[in-house]
Length: 65
View 1: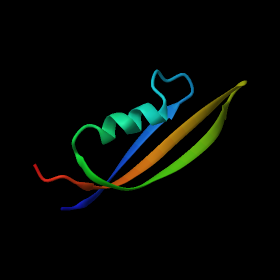
View 2: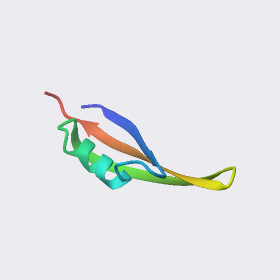
View 3: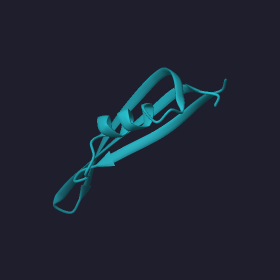
View 4: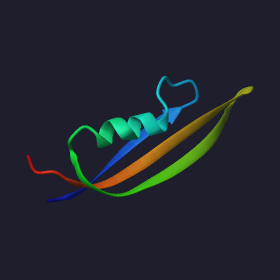
């Protein structure tokens, strides 16, 4: 059993929210045991717009199939 990480992210206007992406990955069958999830949010000014980028680092033990 190996400890693995997976980074997922969303930005303003994306179709799926960060929690939906995390839940889809956790239900994919790769994750045997969830260790932790670290979140980060960054606001980026682009001209007269602000883009909010949210990322999550999923730390887990991989299942052996």
